[in-house]
Image (tube, rainbow, N blue to C red; front, side, top):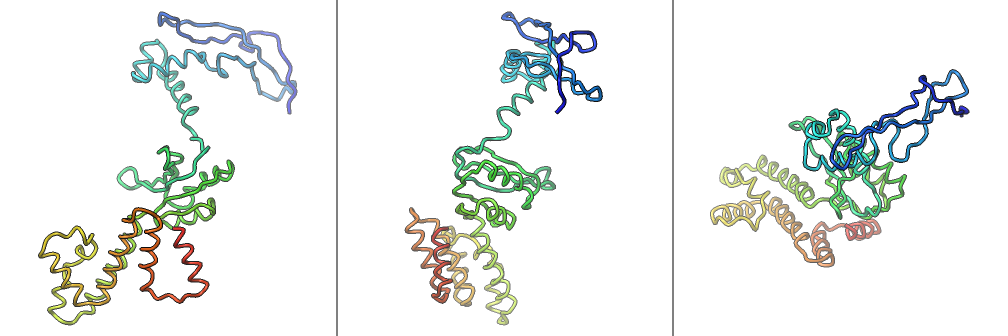
Length: 310
C-alpha cells in the first residue's frame, strides 16, 4: 500500500475546484473552494487522491443539492430543456441523471424476495433474446440477462447465493435451461410450471397421435373424417358451440380409440387448474394419473409425493 503525504497547495496540484449550485431565484452560482490533495511518496506512483467533500462527490463539478434540483426538473422536462434552463452542458445533465438512476434502481434489492418468475422475450424482431426475472409479489424486475440459455441466469444465481436469499417458489416454462438453473441455484424452492406450457406440451403429444392415426388409417371414409380435425382436437372442448363442429369432433373420437383416450386425457388435465383449492386439484390430479396403471412400488410413491408438491 503506497504511503501518502500532504503537499502544499500549488498550481501543479490544482488546489481549487469549481462547484455549481442553484440559488433561490434559479440563477447559476459557482462556488470556488480549496481542496486538499495528496501525493504518494513513491515517485513512480501517479495516484493523486483528494480529501472528501461532504456536499459533493469526487471530482464532480456540482454539489448534491444542485444534482437533486436537476433530477426534480427532469421529472417534467427533457435533458436538453434542463440544460438550456440552467445554462449547463447536456453531458452534465445526463451524468446527473445516470448517477441517480444507477443509485436508486440498479441493482434491485433481493431482500424479502420469496416468489419469482422467469421467462424469456425477444427484441429487434426476434433476433436477440433476453431472460427476465420478476418478483411475483411486487412486480419489480430483478434481473435481465442476455440470451435464453443457462448462462443468462448465471449472474442472478451468484447474487442469490451471495446474499443467501431464501426463494420459496419459482414459476417458469418448460425450458431445459430454466430447469437446470433452478436445480443449481434454488434446490429447496418449489418449481411451478406455467399452465399454458404444460397444456401446450400435452397438445403436442395429442397432435403426434393424430398424425400417426391419420397416416395409418386405410379406410377412405375414416380418412375423410380425420382430415382437418387438428384445431378441433387441440382447442378447448367447452368452447366448441357450433353443432356441426361438435358433431364432427364426436365422430372423429368415436372411430379411433387411441385418439379418443388422448383427447379426453387432455380435457381432464385442464380441469386440474379449474379447482378452487389445492386439495381438490390434488384429487383431480390423482384421478387423472390412475388410468396410466403405474405399478405401486416405492418409486411410484416418491413420484406421487413430488406430484403432490406440484
